[in-house]
Image (cartoon, one colour):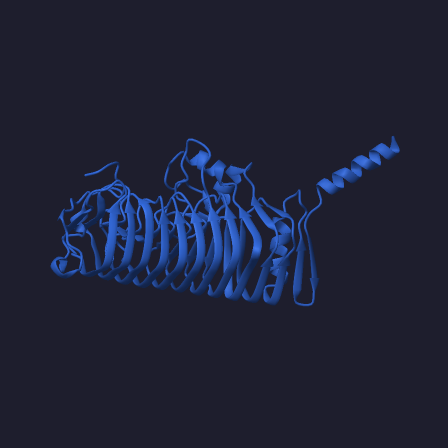
Length: 407
């Protein structure tokens, strides 16, 4: 009886074991519990080794049941070798406690950042958001309050993120906000639904109020925008990214707040591949204020894309399109080729209040996958006659982002 009780107590102790943090000099090493909530020890490691330090998360499964805010780091290297799993059995906790990001009423599960900070996954780190429960809870809605972005780079200068895999993110995979000089390389993301509900708003990355962001060598499978540049983003470049089932390369949305202008400048997409996507290289805004300037889509290849090139000043609603003051100018599409799902290669409607200026198309080859000639629909483009791509018809103001057949 005594032996049996001792065994039970030992088993209980093992079941309740927490992650271990060991600090040696300027290095904190974390070993996961494998069973209990590892969040307190993760946060402890970031507190103990927040300046001129290294943090190593050893192999194993880390259970994350609480929000994390690991910001204000300085000269810190983070190496992750394990699998981090965000809990799915306490949705009400997440809905009530996720951290606001000051954009569109959205929230995040993890704010990460500081100055001169690296996070390396070495191809072994895996972030599992248990996204299916959020997809089912959302039921094809848009922005379910409290549904968290998995990973947010926040108020940072000099960030490197490399070699991390994401699976089943709760909402957007990553968000870059109030940051500059951010590099994100060799990332793999996949969020798909296995139920009747779709993986809405599972973007690969969104930038906002940030500059000098460099993204390269990604693979993204998602149910929404793959690579999205939002308002007040400058000097953003993407290189060698493959997107599946998504919106691929997009500027926007912008202009959602009529009182606050949005500006996007100096964005470069190059060597981007899109498969079975809604769009390929496109721009979307609300009827607000601001501008999109000096954007290049270069070497864009795609297969079975619903509507490859698309411009709208009244996204989603299709209303008040001509009241938009978001000026789109100096945008180039170079070496864009692939197959469209239907017979529309482009639907480009620019606001009558702010016509598009200096659009340029060079070496465009878009063909409907089922044969025939692709249509190019245009409205309110000032240099339409000299832009390098012949328009075949007029684009209506409320032209949809996604089509359901030939037009």
